[in-house]
Length: 308
Image (cartoon, rainbow, N blue to C red; front, side, top):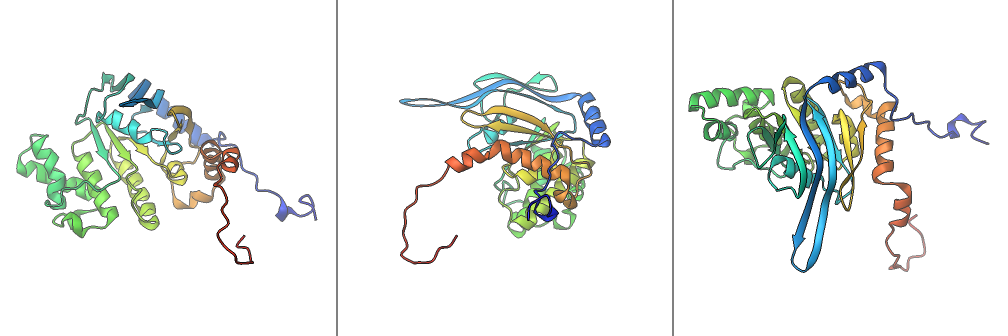
């Protein structure tokens, strides 16, 4: 029976990732009217080592992020995603180009940028409350009482009020990252840089943390640049996605995510979500490359039956 006579056999039609509902199109129009928080122009980064030619990690990368936008950065392994985050954070010097935050050049770390890493970076000898207070007292010039009041407010925002006196080893992985987010936001940065912050979490906790992050983002005046290798995560979180090629890292595309907000887990099966994910899959893992990228076959079994 052919696909024409058997509808069940017909391939699933995926809409174009460019198709946007009117409310989505209107939202992007509003985003583009907001001030540009981060402007990256012709950014390049090379690494040198003795007796070897320089390794170009990023090559002439240019993009903009608008106020209160959540932009994910995604690409194949070796595309320079984490390097980009470290450059914007001021943790590494750039080789060429320009980065402006609120129109001012980025030259090193600053309180206008907060960062959350994949590894847990809380001070293990301090309670959750004192971890959040640390930057406020040391760098923010607040008194102990002011820092505690502010820290408790941020713990309430991330849902950790009941664990204020707990130590990091007493927290789950997701709770540690929520505490790290609270600590980063407590300094009231203009931008939050997140370098695969959910990568070390199990699948269930990761999904829960994605929901928490969106709830926090909706309540706070913060712009987020989020590094990830997870396609579903990028579509679920992002307004736009910066897609990088690898070796060297170059901008392949800046994609608008046509999935309406507010986001929910039910949207994972929506046509707009599937279309966006399908487009990312084609860019990052093209079928031709998958066919060519096969390991050599070494037969190491004498069993007569096949596993495939």
